[in-house]
Image 1 (cartoon, rainbow, N blue to C red):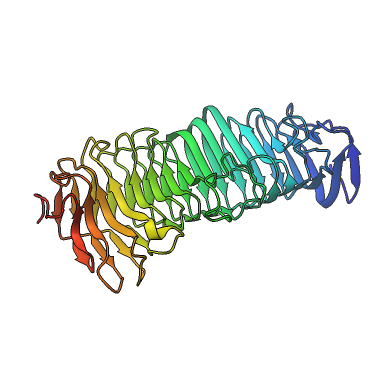
Image 2 (image 1 turned 180 degrees about the vertical axis):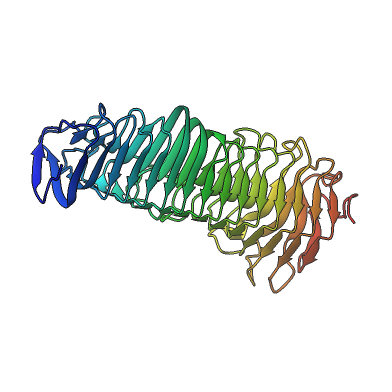
Length: 432
């Protein structure tokens, strides 16, 4: 069906399966009354909607999708308000599905919520643009009983209200979240979870790669908690750039994850946090660049991160970069044997204080160890300060003998007050 270049005022269209609804980027559909979808596909299947503008005009009128077989492309969703009754305040909604579907090259503007879906498989959401949401996430998917083969790629999101991409439950399989740009939040954003990408999921093997996420109200509030939240085992988080937020990447009960080649800039607390949501066994954290987090480069608060490996990461901190540094403390990497329950490996990392004249009251501790586990290895790490006078410490422990049990080999220290500090000012037993 070709809608031509016309504008239609509708009460909700009755639609059929195996049809194409074409608007040639010129047709406009408005609804006559609030609390309805402009097109209700919930009882049909296998159709295409292409090039139609759904203009809510402050009343509403998006799409209700079926269980399977939807292609939505080249459409615009404008001014669908939060005042509509749920779920008609969503631009695109499905209570189940859509499976075997594609949502591509659409534009979402000045609406309440973008897309909300449940229990999907074989779904691609790609190359969409969203600008200005007023009441919720741009994309929310909850899988009850599992979802498989979902790709979310190449979307550009600005002036968000809450989360850019929020995925829940599962188990998920073959999930890919790649090459998205999440660029800004609205001034009147939500104070409940305005995060970049949240994978609060079960399942295995999620891939989160090459996303750019920028929090635009740097340092103004704790509501911007996470750039990326990682759940599910064997997840791969790589090549992402995250600026701002309290925490760049948080690992929430995600064992066997790989976190690599990410660039994390100006977090107000930690670059990477291992949370206490569950065990993070045998996680690999490698080749990440962490620039000027306020308090910690990498912080462990996990119930168990035994067997985890940290290699070739670069953590830099400029004393004086943050207001309050005159009495502030920075720890590049913090761990404790209370949470390890097995050895960890920390090899080939660079931790550097970069300011020429850090404030006199500022403390720089490259590696803070509350306790070691037999078999912990710290090897080939390079710890330094670029200050005009020696500044900060390499390994620092608030408790005597807490470094014993670990091995220390081939680490280098430059322009520091001491290679070892705190309650342990002499080399530990495992030094080589």
